Length: 346
Image 1 (cartoon, rainbow, N blue to C red):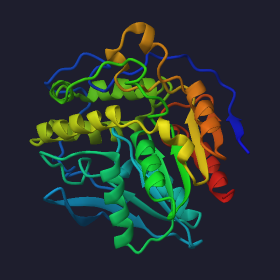
Image 2: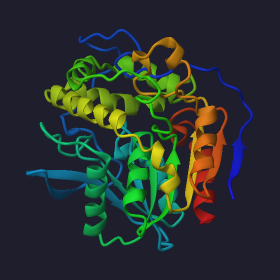
Image 3: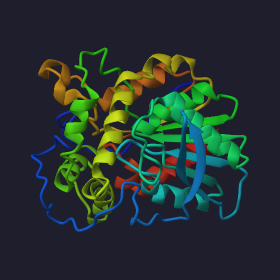
Image 4: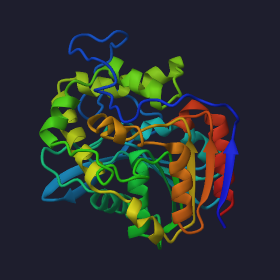
């Protein structure tokens, strides 16, 4: 039985869809106001909130490293939660969620996918959600984990969906937090962008551009000083000596999320699914390339969650009317209570 729970009663304005951090404002390659941090291409110099370990992976003829955090529960309830980050995020941005889950008895695994954050950034790699799901399964196997609740945010929602489709036997529950990929932008008319063009755009990424983008889409037009940490984390990688390596991998993964939709397979999901949607979100990758009559229809999270829950068998929907793309950071106490409630129902 499908159920929708609407949280909060505030109304937020609709924002322009589909800008990336490089197009949210005019960028400068010079010094960015408020930015002093510079990090290595694998986030060297940025300290994660919990111990970071590395899994050696032999993949596509390369020896790669996948960074991850494995955090024990305070009073174990026997369940493990896998947290999958989005394209503009890292395992570290799950800090508040990790604290809430471990305090509630859950063991937590929070990896950085290959190509992101503290993990390897190969020059040549066939990025696919299938490959990332296989890498993630290898991580779980290495930790002896046979059953897991999979939580995916943003691009991580597309990966979480693919993981649940590939490995339904070990996925006890699927939770999608403002996932992108609830619609097929390509099929709706968004023009394709070459990887070379995406790379040129990624190289222009700035602290100010990231902040303006996040303020619009992640935080409903609002800003709190604690958000600066996550902006600096991302911008610092682009500013460092390995910035072009970071930009190149971001361009490669942009192609992956645009050309590998999962929405058409929602009806095939066989595990209990919970969608958690901040409704002021208007994220729609590539919408800035589309004609206005198409762009204006994309990223409508007031409807996308409802449409998805009608297709995914037995899915449940929680909506936060006044929150944006990152409800777990924007209003952590409300989000985490809803998450814990949702995990208990399975």
